[in-house]
Image (cartoon, rainbow, N blue to C red; front, side, top):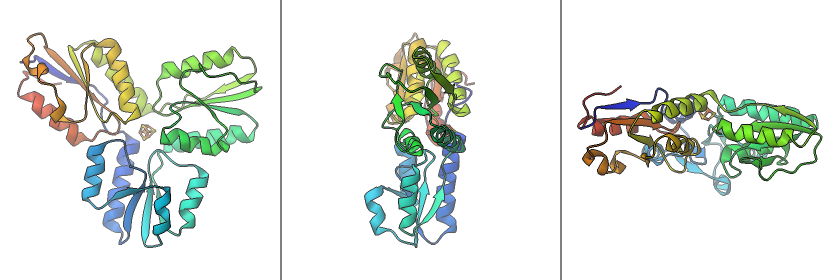
Length: 287
Ligand code: SF4
């Protein structure tokens, strides 16, 4: 039996994801048209299945040809390039933009500094939809880097931004590399507050537990980063998609007294609660 389960202070759905899910479901209720999201709304299978049950599915660029004015397309929190937005609108569909305001703020920064002649550097995952979308705001000219190791620019004016879910340590590394190259550097720490809070509380919790559970999808960038952060502090850090993946050894080991739990910004409350319910049967307390 565990002594206690400690839930990280900030865990689960962030403001931007919650807003995107609510926008989609309420559009579905209010509207006679069929609702589609442009790409999977979040990187979490449980949420995608939930939306599917409500009749909301996702489409990609090639599917646009078969849509028309009677359909609604929701832009997810990751945002899109101006070009993609133009293409979607040109089909005549109704468009609801659920781009997270933190992402929109990055688009504005990138456009402003690109127009002023700065080379844009984005610290993040080059294939992540948010980064792909952001790159479109400087005509796809950004240099995208994880940690600065691939940087060798001769640009005289450089503007650095970060993917909203990036680790601060990676942004710091890139700033250090770029500062060493000379030239004018403007840096915006665009890691969003939801990410900062989740990473901070996950780090704190993982320091004081015997097992740390990270709940969410492996395809979620922000959840994966929580896993990486917790793994540094707690060697028994495990990644689970839902309660069915809780390994048996957690319940069998005599040495496990404290179990910590965090969850990515795309992990819904009902999945977290389900994990807590399963742990509760083996727990003396929860905080
Ligand atoms: S992780 Fe941050 S930027 Fe991304 S949707 Fe959530 S609040 Fe918005």
